[in-house]
Amino acid sequence: MLAQGRVIVNGDPAKDIALPINEFSHIVCDGQVLQCISPIYVMLHKPTGVVSATKDDKHTCVVDLLDDQLKKQVHLVGRLDLNTSGLLLLTNDSRWSEALMLPEAKVTKEYWVTLANPLTSEYVKAFAEGMYFDYEGITTKPAELEIVGSHRAKVTLREGRYHQIKRMFGRFRNPVVELHRHQIGSLTLDPRLQPGQSRRLTQQELQALDVPFAHSS
Image (cartoon, rainbow, N blue to C red; front, side):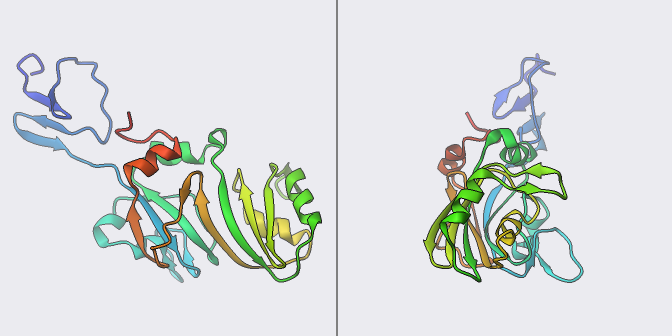
């Protein structure tokens, strides 16, 4: 079949039996399409009160904010807490999502945080040194904290521990009032997206993230 040119992969006749393919390869045999799946990369502005899950009996799920066709195809790339808003990514490209979450990738995540009590320079030093979490028996990686107001800060993390930001501010007995993720790596939440709205990532945005994705060169 290969020798007769009956198998077409990504628009070209397949000649080599060892030709690598994946779930996004476009495959045609004798004029019949056998596989035609396109990679999907979505940024969503997650509102507070929406759970980062595909199914929940009590709350609206992130995927419920997508159209019916799209929600059946994608999975979440990481999570945001119920009361945390901001940038959330979804995809059907598992290799991309796994690469994006790998600690070795060192993809930063930036958050805007509003606190109940005033901030001091002690916070900056403590975040930079890392904090020991007894429950997991680990010390957090150095985090950057920039004070932008008496009760407001920008926090940059290089990891994503359970309720990490809230727990770190909890060491100072300073409750987090609002938490919003506005950036992942080079990707900033589109300011035109209202809470609950989403859009596809552009080719330029995918390339700027510097994480391998389907059909990347």
